[in-house]
Image (cartoon, rainbow, N blue to C red; front, top):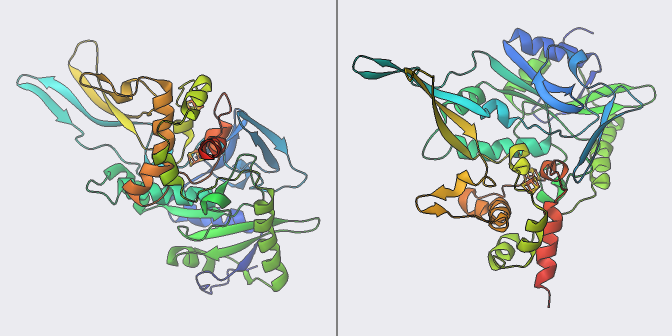
Length: 382
Ligand code: SF4
Ligand code: SF4
């Protein structure tokens, strides 16, 4: 089928064939984008550079529960038949380790070279961003772009980013995006959104353009307007994900609930299990804490300053003059959860949790944020 040459309206549902995905990837590459998408590595779905549709986890599903993650096989050849894995897209905008600058000793002292962090020299295209992840990106935009200080690395990647979202047709075992009103269907923050439909005889995508850039690229591909049957299939896929979602977070009055419960006995209870390992913050797509480390070579002639991800669960993070302000596991868990669900709202005007479920799946002892909120709520009942 030749390219349609027609500019679709934003939000209009059109159909591209299964083969259309590879054409889309080729067009993005032609525009100079480096493709980043889901792929299988070490028994998990991770986000890495991909070059074609064959790098995607075709026919792969995931089975997730509190403290457990496993890949499985689907009966079809779906490209996006899984949910979110251990990594989030934040690692491309807010790298886990970033050299801020280096300095070399000279006769007068030190001369700083590379006074700004190096930025990627290619524009990125994220392929397969889920609705909860779009919300997480919007939260990180507030942190890194909309405050008093703008993060230059984040901005350089974000400004040229092309986002292909994928609407979830299944819910992961630990997802609760419906409770957080962040999914499972993408409503904004993307250039193109895809709903993948697989059936006995059919395999196609219902596509919507969410930006002019998305509409322009779509016009260079063969597509046809969606008929009612195809629109219904897309709706049913979203409904299936909603019906499958096993976890719920009751958010009504959650900020006040946590503010009233600084002294709840539940914090002690969860601290008996929590290892303070920081996994939950590393996998979280919205957590943004970092620390700064200076290193030198053995001669002391060359020094570097690095920014690295840090976590409110590490002892060093809350060490200030005079000692540590959160020396118990109880106080660190309370800080993390209260920040996510209460103080974050005061700070940024939105919850710090998008309901992706990663912190539940990747907690080695299976601590579940939805259960902790429920327990605190129940603890208040007379
Ligand atoms: S809640 Fe779980 S993942 Fe988070 S620090 Fe505690 S043990 Fe680690
Ligand atoms: S707190 Fe947990 S469920 Fe919420 S966004 Fe972070 S990782 Fe996802």
